[in-house]
Length: 154
Image 1: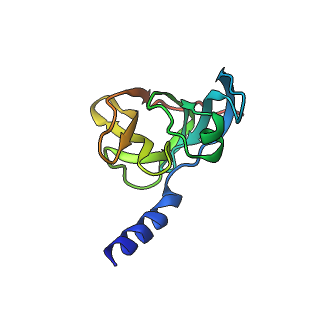
Image 2 (image 1 turned 90 degrees about the vertical axis):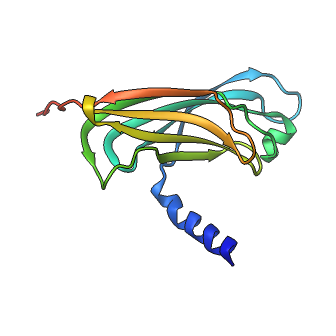
C-alpha cells in the first residue's frame, strides 16, 4: 500500500517538472540495425522561474536496445541556462529542487537538473547529474544565471 501511495504521489508531482523540447541532434556512432548513437540537444523552461530556459546536451544510445528503450545512456551531460525574459518566481524556491528529470535506462538510472538560489550574488545555479538506485555518477555540469533587469521593448 505504501508503494502505491508513493507512486501516486510521484505521478502527481510529475506535471511540476519541466518537459524538454528537442532542439536537434548529431550522430556519433553509426549502427547497422536501429538508430545511431547520438548527442541530443534539448531545451526546457524552469516551471517555477519565468524567463529562464535551460539547454541540455546528452548522449542517447542507439542500436536495437536504444530503439526499444532498453539501453542505458551514458552519464555525461552539459547544461547552459539563460535569461530569456524578465525573471519572475512562481512560488517559493527550494535549494536543490528538481526542475527536470529524464529516465536514462529502463529502470534504475535518471538524469536530473536541480536549481539553487545564491541569494548573496542574486544568481540562479543549475546542476545536471545522473543517478542510479545503487550507485550514481560524480560526472556533472553546472551553469549560473545572474538575475538582471530585463529591458523594456517597445
